[in-house]
Length: 150
Image 1 (cartoon, one colour):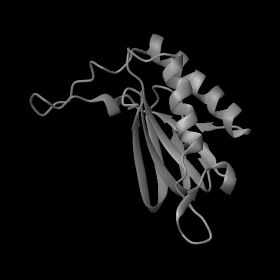
Image 2 (tube, helix red, strand yellow):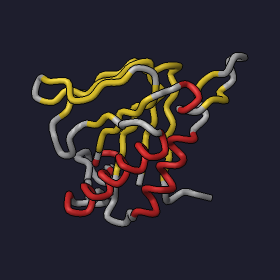
Image 3 (cartoon, one colour):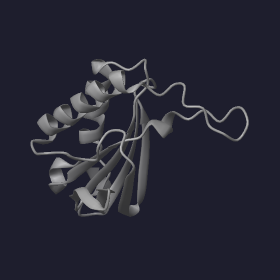
Image 4 (cartoon, helix red, strand yellow):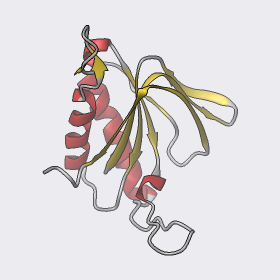
């Protein structure tokens, strides 16, 4: 399971011309799920996301987590994070989980993050054509892979 976390001042996701989710200060999290992922990956990665200390403290050092700044999460499923570009110019998505595996794990991540954060997580819709807008703060962008824990 892969997450790309972007520290944002604001972010939103629009589907079919209608805003489905939007946040102010917080994280836009793009989540890629493979067919090898499990609930253990959800829990490990979810804790990493909520605990990520990438907000500035009073001295400007990245020392504060989401809870410290009363931040929110906008979680977007994105199978293209598992694109393989080894051959040719058309990416292969063979490592991306099929919906029957990915949807339950995506939904588990939503519930896990809500429990860890203590508030609702805003989302897109799995498999939908989405337009994501954001104002990256910093810019700060962090990539985390649950299979790279050491």
